Length: 384
Image 1 (cartoon, one colour):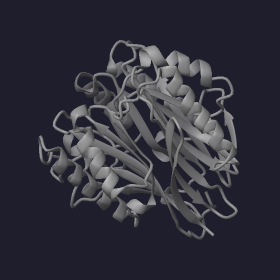
Image 2: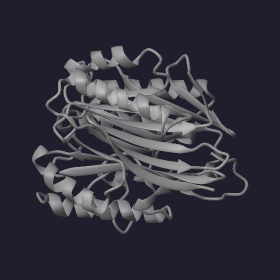
Image 3: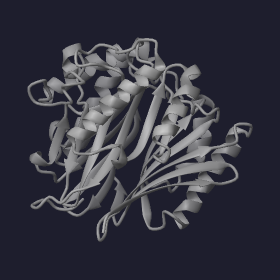
Image 4: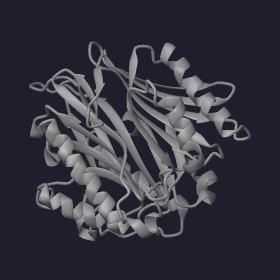
């Protein structure tokens, strides 16, 4: 019996939002987002509160689950990342993503964790985190970076290195990569280099407007080292048949990204024998001509963004009820109160985090991304 469950747990110093998808006999999925609720506390106090809450959850609501991806959202990575790494690296045993995208509730740290049950995991020698279950091998990568001269060269190296990592596992970027994230320091200046490098590397990998691209988020975000202009997170799966991967277009609301010079898919869903997983790329207030809709109006942009996401989900035969998490990016911190109130009214129980992260085009005031899952019986495919 499959079922979804959402719950919020309030403690003295944290608020935890939990999404559970329980699959009888197969891997169950969890998304949790832990928020500090004491902005007056020091960073170390907030960090310890988040980590203590997570450790407690592993013995209670998440008993038996294994962390696959942890993403920490920090307010000041240069002064915070080393402390975080010192406390979490030893025995972390999962994909670790750390990005300066300040939580907009005024605290210094938030944590999103994706967990599974009944899986085998290991860190591969090349740094990818392998998750085995059923007929599939899932590969997660977090916080990849280098210090090449500019954002274009950094992105080119990141992608070329990732192509080699996948090849070592018998995979190809075009066939196996499901999702990428690019966190770009000073996105207004450096995103153009990311786009140029990605476009050019993709052509060499048979990723073109005539084939397909990869679902992605390209967003403002900073590494602790100011020389790092781009960092990348990734997700790929080995063992899929080509027909298990489907791309989402929503042509009534959105246009193909190549029409305005970039190369990513709006969304992807993957069918397994027992479920459908949905990955919605970073989505903003855009129309099917590639234009910013409702410039300067945060309420209208939020509503149009929701409409775009809802249309993508509908194409995957899903709704907002299927979502396990949402990450909401705001360009202007002054818009937080308005946007949070809108989300709290419409999505009171979906795990979500609001962070300060400029979108790749200045006219976009808000962007969101999400992941979801739906029960789906597909004969002929192995379960997730």
